[in-house]
Length: 487
Image (cartoon, rainbow, N blue to C red; front, top):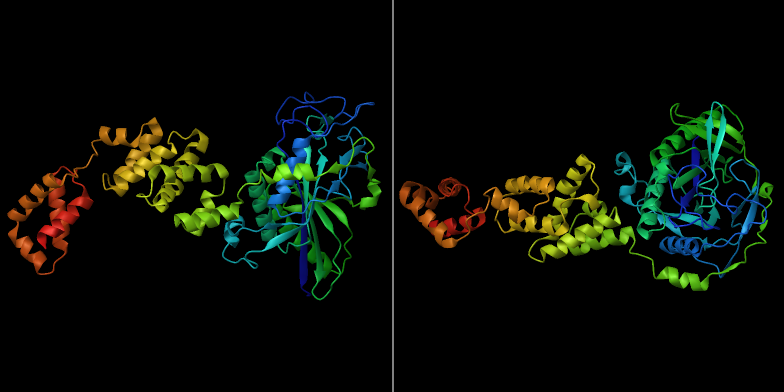
């Protein structure tokens, strides 16, 4: 059987988190009662004219800058003409030949790949090239029932970025990593909430197979109804298998659109695909072209540190592992929380120790209790105090975990909980010296064993002193004193 080369391109629609819609003043909010956020403009009523949402343009430019795109001097609006019940104007306002952003690319972060594929990445450090990013208005939402189809136009007219990749993706795993990396960048830029469950991030997959050695791409098959990053991966695997079997049988594939059925684990034919010219694009007479320079200057001021840049900085400045840096930088709010804790702790507490507590303890208890970071009863300052208490030897690591649990349950500070639980340790050298002297004097035979080279005696004597102090002797200070006296 011949081997086939897989070529994949993704078209991602990201809903911008603007306050109002693209061409009218209706709220661009999710979850309102059907058809309550509408007006003559977004319903396409006669005589209603569009008014441009400048915030949407700036946010698209921020996304383009973060992804390394170039911005042409002039951009314009076009009408994409087609009939469908969820598009009341019978055309969609979009951008055809002069989009806001051109080129660029999405870096595939190592930890954006599926966990079961992270040890076998074919092209580490790959950047998937982009064709363009253009801005357009969303359509309404159709809900199909046994009695008919219901239409909700609340979503109609909300601003969408369409991010189009080159056919530069080779596998389902790369597509998975592409979507995760892109979503993280959009969240960092504050341009989209990018929640696939709410329809704020939607993805269509274009996939084709061709025999090895053939330069011309095979028939392009578009996949729709992909509601999660994992569904995209499953759908691509299933479609590769379907196309491979068809080609092995000698079938000729035709350009078409297929729907992913997640329950059946298969793609199903929807229609043969119309070419772009079937939409009869032409410039919108109601909207002037955009001179991009003034808006681009403002957008440049809003470009944040990119996720991979933050990861690199965390590794360099805080000596954390690449894995820990990726976890901490996965969300801007978490990265900021961590850095606030590091700043509060000061230079005497290693940032790596704070990272361990954030990743292994804080995130675990937040997830277990369904609590967001913003709702956490433990503040960055409170965690830094707890970690500092462990580092100075004021409490043991096991005691610290008990204190942490109480802090999360009550919102009390580490100092208050340590005092309430009687975990305050004796660090006064005078008091500890007396305890050391008493144990040494009472056990001369053990002293001789230590001097003969039996280091285990030190642990035994430490245990005796801890008993005598009721477990409150600072083990770090005690160890230093005892070794000095025995030597």
